[in-house]
Image 1 (cartoon, helix red, strand yellow):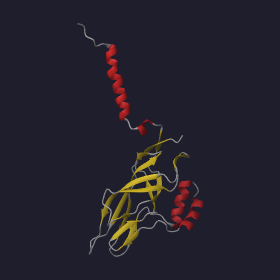
Image 2 (cartoon, rainbow, N blue to C red):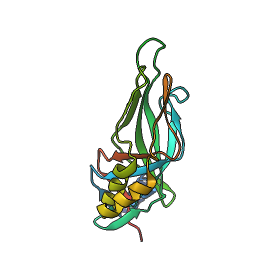
Image 3 (tube, rainbow, N blue to C red):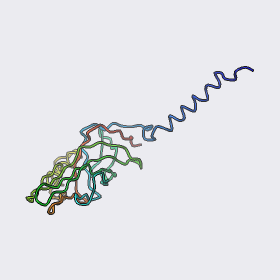
Amino acid sequence: MGNASGPGSRKIPAVLLGIALTLAVPSWAQQNLVTVPAGTSLLVRMIDSVDSSKNAVGSRFAASLETNLQVGGVVLAPAGTKVYGRLAQAKQAGRMAGKSELQLELTEIVVNGTAYPIFSSDYQVSGKSSGGRSAKRVLGGAGLGAAIGGIAGNAGKGAAIGAVVGTTAAVVQKGEKVSVPSETLLEFRLQQAASLPARS
């Protein structure tokens, strides 16, 4: 009996392999993606609160974009888009010495119901046992307004917004703990370029 294998029979495994590779690629990777460059500013409003005395490292938190995320004048994610992050570091101050610290970072942005990975700069806040505190990338008052105006392309209008918003972005320190309350406005920047789908 002759060998039943031949050029026709070899096509079947090749077709199956192609189907398998297509299924293995995430659906978002098959879309028309736009690159958001590293360094792009993301101004977000916290939905969840984060507390150095309650939240463990790795805890997930939710926030939303305060301004549109756009590239070249094209909006990829409008204000209100959900973003997620994690508590990268948490340190509780001792009774006699040391200071409480929080370090937050963004990890995902949800566009059209799909989560896309992002890698942001860290937001750090630390409280001092003496009662002082230091915070990076927390915005309030005119500084916040200027940031909103800069992202939206109207710095003058942003300054006016800041006068109205006041010190909405406040980091709270009580005794030996620090917390970032819900509704706090924070600014992050992309550490790496991100790929998001073009809006139809």
